[in-house]
Length: 183
Image (cartoon, helix red, strand yellow):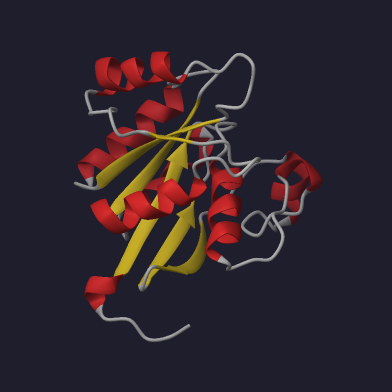
């Protein structure tokens, strides 16, 4: 990686409820930016950020993991965070090091308890929050309902929420562009 000045570096946490796809979104971002040449799958235990034996066994993130990429003359340090309530402290420590957060919400499930806990931690840290509605490719996805939930329950504007399918790559480049523009 080349050297970057402070105004060209973004520290961005990827947060959400367990199962919303934070690690899959991270894999998609790493792949689309060229940081990795093959996307790993959580179900195969082959992701870049979930490499500890316990994470592979459970299929969930246990540790916050740093994953740097370069995009449009900007270095973005992604921090993939755990979505389970048992690891809230890990999420809070990661958010303290960031300027922004991608709030990943499952398009089929909507806002869940840990979604709220993580977004409140991000708001407490005065972070720029970019809503990312993931899994839009699934038959039961309802992104418009989830946008309304984001606005009604969390109280943040969801008109520019990024719609993604991390597994198919839909919207991943839009996430990278939103980070450079907003954070």
